[in-house]
Each structure stands twice: as C-alpha cells, then as structure tokens.
Length: 306
Length: 306
Image (cartoon, rainbow over all chains, first blue to last red; front, side, top):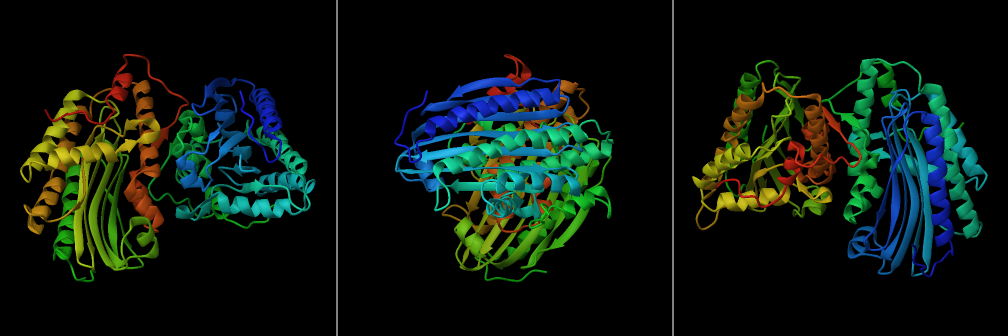
C-alpha cells in the first residue's frame, strides 16, 4: 500500500517496485550461491505508513548471517526526523534495499550494499546508496578487483562518479576512535539529484546499475574463498574484525542511528550485526603477519582501481 | 603528577589518592576471588595532562574479561567538551575508578561500578558514580540481595539516596530501542554536591562507601555461582545478553560517548566490551523459560529492596 505524494521525480512507484524485485533477485542469487540455507521472510508494517520485507539467512554454508531488507515507508516527517536529519515539516516517502552479509569463512569479506530513494512533499527528492567491502584479511588483488568493478559501473554513467563516490566511502566508512577504515571502502553517495548533465532517469539508471553490481561482486568472492581452509587463530581474527564492524555500525552508521532514533523496526535495523563478535584488550598482531598487513591497508586514500 | 587547580572542594588530591588505593585493593580482592588469572597493568599519560592505570584480567577462572581502571586527568575544557557536555571554558580535574567484569559462567552476573570526582576551575565540583548488575539470568533473590546491600550503604548516609539513585539507575541503564533495562539496575548518581544537609566531607564519605561496597557484592555472587554447571544453550544466551550490553555501551553510555568524543584512551574506554558477544535475528525465548522470565524482569520500577 503506497500513498502517492506530490513527487519531485515522479518515481515513487517505479523505485519501490523495482527495489522489491531487486530484493527478490538478490535473495534468489544468494541462495543459489550459498547452496544450503534459505532466507526467512518477515513482513512488517510501519504504524505511520508503509512497511517492509526483512529477509534473513542464518547458518548457511557460506553466509553465517545475512540480511537483505526491502522497505517502502511514508508518512509525516516526525519532530525527531526534523531535529536529527534537518528535514522540513512535510510528507515523506522512502524506499530502498539494504544488505549486510557476514560469511562463515574468514577469507571471505563482509559485504554491504544499500540503494535508496527519498522523496519529500516540498518538491525535493534524491537517491543514495553504495557498496563497500570489509575483508577480514585484505588481499590487494581482491581490493583491486572490487574497486575496478565499481569503477566500471560508475564510468558508464559519469566518469566523475567513481572518484567522488570512492572518496565519500573512504570518509564515511571510517572509525575515528580506531583511526582505521571499516574495510577497503567502495562507493557511497547521497542526495543524488538531476543536474545540468543528468536527468531523473539518468540518476535512476545509475542506482539500478549499482543494485545490479552486487551479485557479481559477491559471487566472485564466494567462488574464490568459500572453500579455503582456515585455522582457529584466523577465525578469532575474524571475530575481532567483526567487533570493529559492530563499533562502526552502533556508533557511527547514519542509517542505524536514523533507525534507532526514529523507532524503526529494530530487528531489521540490527540485522547488520554478526552472529559472533569478539573484543580483546589492546590486541596487536605480530609485526609482518597477515593481520598486521591488513591493518596497514585500512586507511583512506588508497587508489585501488588502477 | 597532578596540577593543583583552584578547587571548590579542596579534594582533588585526596580523591585521586584514595581512588588509586581503591583500584589496588579491588584488584587484589578480585585476584583472590578469581584464584587463577592476574591483572595486567598499562599506565598511560594524557597529552593534555594527567593519565591513568588500566588493569585488565583476561581468561580467569571466574572472570572472562574484566577491567579495573583508575585515572586522574586535568587540563583545559576542550571545545568538544564544551559542546558535548555543556561545560564552560575552564580548567578541569577529573579522577575516578571504573570497573566492568564479564564472567565466564552464565549464572554469574556482569557487574559495573564507577566512582568519580570532577572539578572545574570556575568553583564547581561534584561526585558521581554507582554500581549496577546485569545478570544473564535474573534470580529474584539475587536482585533483592544486591539492592538491599546498596540500600544499606545508602541509608547510612541519607535515607533519600537509595530511592532517588535507584530510580536514576533504572532510567540511565535503559535500552530504548529494546524497551528493556540493561540489567536489574542498582544505584546511579551524578552532580552530587554539598547541600543544606551535607558537607563536602559527607559527599566524599558516601562515595567512598560506594567504592567499598563493590567487593562484598561481587564476592557473594562468585561464591554462589562460579562453580554452577551450565549448558551450551545457557552459554549462548549469555552471549546474546552480552550483545545487548554492547548495544547499551556503544549507543547510550555517556562515559563511553564522552571518551570517544574527547579522544580518550580507546583501549581503556572499551575494556567494558566482552570477549564474545552474539546477535541472532529476532531471538525469542520460548514462553515460560528462564530466559523469558529474565526478559520480563528487565524493566524499570521494580522495588527489589523490600
């Protein structure tokens, strides 16, 4: 059920329908890739308007815990949203797909994707989204593959997108109190709107391309790493890295903050948290170890797409 | 090394010396109770002035991960502190002891204690602190014991303290997005200053009594539960409850927020996080189970001290 608001782009219906289909196709692809577990679906309604479909897969062969969420919500901009997000008093419509996958195998990366559309009845609308990768062990060839893949997707729409959105991801997925990036970044963008060069259709085509870029990237890593053997120590390192993921998501992630502060559906918001995470006091990997090398690559400004 | 600031209470030296001694005596007592592991100490200096001693015990017989931190820091109130804490531009002096202990055994509770003194060169000073308990399984007799113990400590100083500080703990140790309290609460107080009934010495004596109330409470639970056998399912429940502890500390805890936002020593601030924590999508304990009963008791306003 969707209330039509006076839309700046005229895309409220198209976007939500396409995002719902994207959730379907990604879940099908991930079940095929995983080969063992199936997604469980919870549909929910938002008291103020709209709702969503949360799909969670737990204890798969490849995915330990993963969520692929779709939502399309609308209503009045609450006082909290006005205060926290700087939005005006208006009606809003918001739709999108959010994904976080925590793998079983420490050689597999954690992956996150989000594509979203937001519309305000005062005649403003925009797209946002991105894909980023959090390997427990950073391998340079993987980082290059991932960023080249994203650069190709971006370059088809605007050559300026990748450099801009790559830097945005570096800045956004950063843990100041650890002075490290969450992972190797990717692309992140918000408030994407038509300009002199791009129409609403152009923006929408780009966002769809980002949504479609997810499965090939994940399939690549699943093919490469899901069968690779690992030690107990490598598993422990994975748990420690997940601890950092938890720190980022609970302390800094704007989507999580927005959800917690606007009484969103808590189990859908926190599906991003891993099944297990670990903290060890002042853990320092030994010099020259693969863990120490990983930490050295968790910084902003590395040009991976060369 | 401590710079003397024009102190409202004249207690800057006394408090920090006594708190350092409290850390010593509590660590000695906890090592005796644990019987296996020893605290490791890291001393650190704060670039702006002062420093601390972080003491961490990992993989003990009873304590899986615990920290007992002392600090005494001073300097200028930074712009961030002015903005985030509403402090005026002044010199400050702050000292205290903070403890969080995560036990091995799921029948043992998580315990937290903090006593602190804060002084501003504009002629203001105050005490703060508290003790609270987060059982993985709430047993009513334990909650009664704990609250009666705290009430006795409070009543010796002011009969109004326990009811006021108990409610403050209920309100403070609350996870709004889960609509549950972190545990069974305890006492929490801040901005404790002399008034018509109490001098600085009275306030200080009360804070010392809170500091000294910690070991007997913990010894009671260690004696009672540290040898009790448990199942794998009970251990998993403990990890899930620790997940909530992580959520509270990273999202709401003012001390953690203050530390992260003022570039505190990160490993000391986050010593409160457990070695392992877990999240499971939409976990619901079966009706009537001990886990479900625990959730029913994680609410504000239960009068445990009767």
